Amino acid sequence: MSRRARLWLLAPALAGFLGLLVWGMTGLPGSGDHQGAVAATIARTAVPERHATNVVTTVTLDYRGFDTLGEEMILFSAALGLVVLLREQRGERKEEVDDDRAAGRKAPGTSEGLRIFSLALVGPTVLLGLYIVAHGALTPGGGFQGGVILATSLLLVYLSGKYLALRELTPIPALEAGEALGAVAFALIGLGGLIASGVYLHNFIPLGTPKTILSGGTIPFLYLAIGLEVAGAFMLTFLEFLDQTLLVRSRSGG
Amino acid sequence: MTAAVQVAVLLLVAAAGTAVVLTRDTLKQAIVLSFYGLLLGILFFAYQAPDVGLSQITVGSVGVPLMLLLTLAKVRRREADREKGE
Image (cartoon, rainbow over all chains, first blue to last red; front, side, top):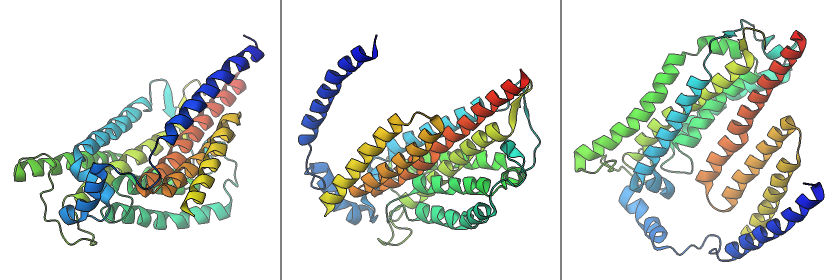
């Protein structure tokens, strides 16, 4: 089919799609004033019932905590699948290289400024990640967001040119164990609710004072579990990708 | 004020989304995609969903582009090695 004919086919399809999209969007409630009954109820009851000021978390980790358990398992199995797929396979070998030669980088390598800057950012990044994990029940963020931020500290180390040194120091089995432990801890906390009150994932821990770090009953503990799982999953993923790029070669060279 | 910010960010997201499609070089596309992910995160902030915004920024502007870049590096290196071998 010629380019012209394709464009003539595309134009009405695009126009139709645009029309439907605009028509659909004009029917949406105005931004910030959704009048749904469930939303209004949860906004009213979240703090008195659950003592968690971040209303979103009372939905994701309490009222609908079971959905989040499923999502956590999705991430867990995705990371597991990736580790299995990207492992060193038959006909491949790991290259022994030092930091400066990794990825074909020539002797001077990364600029000194980038190295120092990324190394200096590692500490603050870890701190920010821990802060976001710990304050999930109070302010936006939580285990997932904080966990990914924690994992990015690994990338900063890579940027600073210390990846292979880090690779040697990183206890991969501990990382894998941490990921699994986080996933299991979520399920076990849910089991606690089943034992204490007969409902799986029921919030069974004393709720604490609103606006303090341990408010929301099980929520901060669930976030700790998620933070561990997500940080582990993303770190393993990043490590596998970095390994593939920097170290793993097929035996025939390539 | 809020509406103005929302409209501005929506337009930026539309422009960035188009830019991702129109960038043909895969390496540059990964970088443009990262900016697009960041803008999408800001869009979620502007629409009062900061939790989703944070997830979007971490995954969309760091995680995904990084995996793309590392994959590209691996593929290109393999191609370079193959050419050398021939």
